[in-house]
Length: 101
Image (spheres, helix red, strand yellow):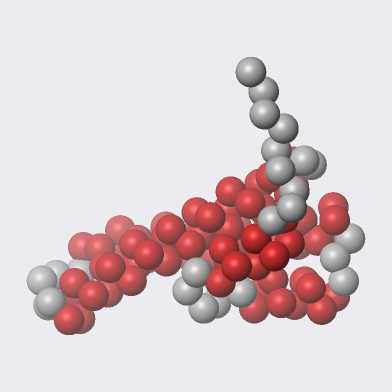
């Protein structure tokens, strides 16, 4: 698997995990009202991973020669929680990394 596609896969997964952390942090901040530590921690992490995901979509699109519509869909999937996972599986689901022993 080309490096750009591998990095896109890792960043898409990490971006979804950061969404989970941010949502849990928002739950504790706004529902439980026990402080905003989770948002302070996961907010910047998610922001960085969001930017990396957008960059990863563009790099993977160039490597895999995705159409403009696919690129727009991939970029749109950066916004709703966890859709980066759906998009990554849609685009790279059949692409597996070789197993090394």
